[in-house]
Amino acid sequence: MPDLRHKYNFPTHIEYGPGAMLDLPKLIKNAGLKKGLLVTDAGIEKVGTPESLRQAFAKENIETVTFSDVQSNPTDNDVYRGTEVYKKAKCEFIVGLGGGSPIDAGKAMKCLATHDGPLEKYDDSKGGDRFITNSMPSFYAIPTTAGTGSEVGRSSVITIGKTNKKTIIFAPTLMPDIAVLDPDVTRSLPAHLTAATGVDAFVHNLEAYLMPEFHPFADALAKEAMQRIVENLPIAVKNGNDIKARGEMLVASAMGATAFQKGLGVNHSIAHALGVIFNMHHGLANAAVLIEVMKYNAEQKTSADKLASLGYIFRVEADAQAVIAAMRDWQVSLGLPVDLKQFPIKKTDIPAIEEYALGDPCCPLNPRKVEKGDVARILENLCS
Ligand SMILES: [Fe+2]
Image (cartoon, rainbow, N blue to C red):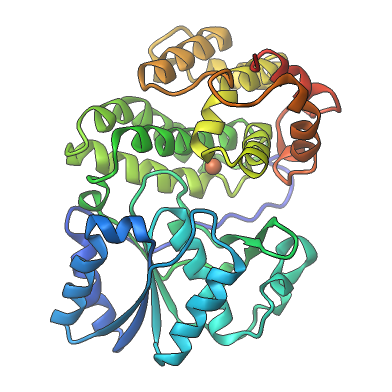
């Protein structure tokens, strides 16, 4: 509400443009840094992007050591091993190059570079942010997908091995010093992953926009980003070398992560449940439940009005059901799922999914209050 106190943050330094990644070593050299840890994963190594970056560092006489063993859902063990490499090599800065995983792992390594373990000590849900007090090494993020937006975020999501729980480490000082949005870097992303990660960025913007909190800055970003995604994701999926579409997607993804400081909603809660229980891809999980979740939200007038206000983005009338139908067509045209029937998820799995989703931190932020039984009702129409 406009008559209450709010806190807004938009502080990230962004370097945008084709070739921006290869200019990063110059900026780091200007900061007086000489040796850094490059955090990435095996898949990205295969594409060759880390090697191009290492060569650019070498040209500036900056030494790098690489930790390329981050898993797709990064664990505390990945973070401990990477931090060890950082300390042993006496590095001065960290670069996270990849999707959300290497960037999140890099952020957690930045924390442990100057703070004692174990990592779960810094669990945000237990007030762990109060222990993140020491000065930390500089951290630079280069996304290779346009989806998570972790490059402009202040948190890191790491699975703690002992509990097998995704744990959020949050502190404003975990924000990357520079986020490099280089569309050249995302060109190698295959079409199906472009669609799956891109729809995640769309849902970030949509759920942030639907949240009722008074946040006109985030709402403006979210609407603008949704329009850019609806137009450009089909182009990027069709032609991965379209630099303009790749660039639009990177910017819209970063805008989404900036907007979702407002919060997300039950779509993400169900996607988190499907990720943890069935190891389902985060973007596909979001896509599969989106239409039913939006139908559920649209039963509440405030959400229906907000959905209706997005008609111009899909070039349909200002009506919630028309927007939802157009959203569904858009997903289908991108080859994305609109239900769970192609996945090994049965109606008998619904209670476990609902239990996890109701305990997820995004769930209480949903614009329509989610009651017990609501998630089951949403899922009922989606499973075979
Ligand atoms: Fe997401």
